[in-house]
Length: 494
Image (spheres, rainbow, N blue to C red):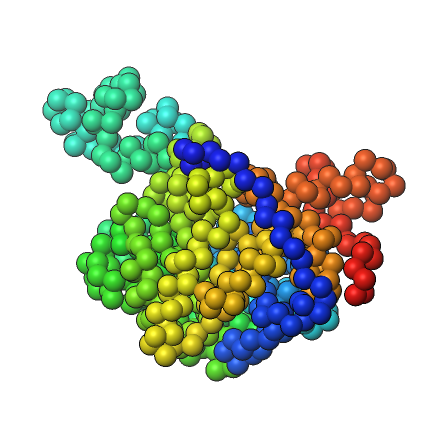
């Protein structure tokens, strides 16, 4: 992953923790309305993909265990991981692209409600993504995958040569020579792996996305409502389809690209289709970027415009992230796919303890605060959800006190300690396990391994009698779920 050149090492902020009485009187642990429902507290676990499903995208026992563990901590809301709206193979990623998934998703909702004592609201993040393939072996690509044409023959000054002769000559070129013969797209396919873009409108499936996606998202939302979710979060962030329509790099000329108003057209059409397919009491919001952190991408001005459009259209909440794009991703190894969290934009999405003068904590606070301020100036009261490097009570409470956000999301911190919410609310903040921001979890995600946390995945595994009671990862090296909190009484208010 990209690291800032300053390479300053930070430790987690270790603020004072509130007593139970102080927590009860805080904004963080006060209720808030989101659409038609009320969260018991302003804490939020954002969507994180843990790779616990199977090749069919089903709710497995591991999926149930994963979300049950978060629910025991009783946050205000949990957003289920990015869940594919198409019924297509996508590895061990959850899917919602067919009615057959409803039964398993219903069980997931029931599991979370039971584990949280009904205190935690449950949303599911709906995602669409385009085709991306692994970086090919050079020889194999040139022998089998490259479509040799007259253009290549002309570039090599081989008029009249057979396809086989041209291909053989191409295979003998060094990289510098090869780059002058291949098109920019062919060179990228060789160097990074094939990847579709929303601007590839020469492909019928890409050209037809504006006609197909509203129905796909609406059908997925209908299934989510049937399964008992409180609402859906439309995934308009990072490197995926809907974010790519919002991006300034979207230059489609069919009315869905170019200007900001054209780029937001499809996301609004998707939202309206979802709204029409579900009951009005069903919560519908989205997650999008305050800044793409890419030279050709969208910035804060775009985000301000998009936020106004989404809020005016009636979205029930807006959740914010930043970065996480393919545009500046590092070149993958042969046999690996490009990963959108390896460049500078990826760092901004998941900064580590090695950082710059600003540090890894709260890098999205100021942009979200400006967006919320803009909405309120237009009398738009849509709740705004802040996330990114949040791990202490004082951080979160000060953000709410200053009106910079309405709800605070804890992602990596919730992974490090799923009991954060119960510990802090009960006056046991000194027992919180603080995330180190080493991005150990991100490294597992990049390899599509079952995501765990280094702070607990080896805990209690050395004793045989303990290990026998623990569900292990596929490789047998790590526990899959954080140990349950063994409350130690240390607060006189308890």
